[in-house]
Image 1 (cartoon, rainbow, N blue to C red):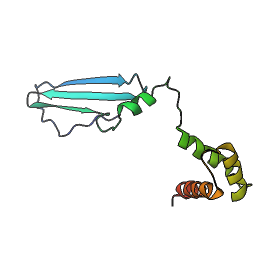
Image 2 (image 1 turned 180 degrees about the vertical axis):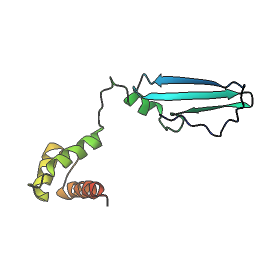
Image 3 (image 1 turned 90 degrees about the vertical axis):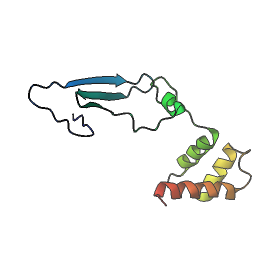
Image 4 (image 1 turned 120 degrees about the vertical axis):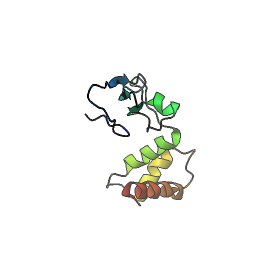
Length: 126
């Protein structure tokens, strides 16, 4: 493993350099990070492996090993629709199944078709 510094430290024979290293395990996520520091009479430098991460508190809590993942209603419906796209069912069949499962959300087949098309294009990368 390499632990880089911002700039080289000019050390001469007889001078001392102090290096400290820490291994940190995130209790919410279980992720392992490292923090290291080098100190010399000319100054010190610190680096770590977690400064560049952008986690908000909700994301951090969701990564806890004991957290139970869940989807909101919109995502549950999308997942259900995706599971109907199996290469065997027609658009009409999919729409009928979805409308029967979620009658309060879909009043016509065209509403289902819009979501099928959006999901299909998204998964194709379009």
